[in-house]
Image 1 (cartoon, rainbow, N blue to C red):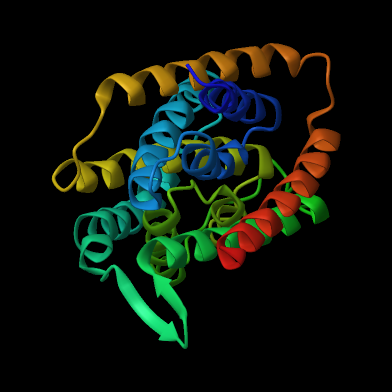
Image 2 (spheres, rainbow, N blue to C red; image 1 turned 60 degrees about the vertical axis):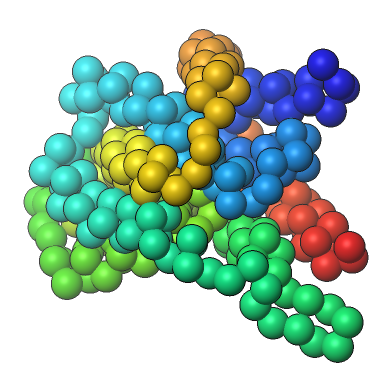
Amino acid sequence: MEVVEIFGYAGALLIGLVLGLIGGGGSILTVPILVYALSLNPVMATAYSLFVVGMTSLVGAIKNIMKGMVDIKTAIIFAIPAFIAVYLTRAFLIPAIPDELLQFGDFMVTKNLAIMLFFAIIMLLASVSMIRNKRKETGEEAKITYNYPLIIIEGLVVGTITGVVGAGGGFLIIPALVLLAKLPMKKAVATSLFIIAIKSLIGFLGDVQNLDIDWTFLLSFTAISIVGIFIGIWLNKFIDGKKLKKAFGWFVLVMSIYILYKELAM
């Protein structure tokens, strides 16, 4: 096993650790690790990322359900438009995108380049969300209400983004749960994991019909990530997750700039 591959599998552990420590954000690292450390092409990397994100989020979601922290009705209402969008994106939109999109002189914008640039932009937005982190806790007794038209639009947008970049989109889902369904913050965080698990795994089904999946690699990578989650949950007893989240936000910001530089400088 080459040194780069060792870093790749260590990255799988890091993904789980971050998810366990701060409850989200770790999935944003999956695609860069798969592309740069393990040399997968972006289409395959985003597909594998959906499975890794889906399975690791499911572990966290089951833990939250057992604690009574997940609002199942809200999760289903949000998840339906999201998983429809993510499935259609993976099954039909991604395969339909041509390998060569645009050409500016000698510079060719390929499908893989476009995916990585879009991913870097999403990373930038996620990093700003984590660094600012100005969400206010709403009262536990607040009445849950639903703005259905906005929920459907938000679900379709987040589902499409998830389908393109292979990340969970928690930084978009959590504010939506707070603003559009009036969920308390703790329940919003817990419920978002359940939504991410559902839409990511259903989105991955759209790839199974189009791609040749290396199940041995994918299951071993995912297993390492899940081990990381349990270690992260244990470490969470001793480390302040809120402070870590801001630091991780800066790390994601640096990573997004690195991706932009690496892709555009090639």
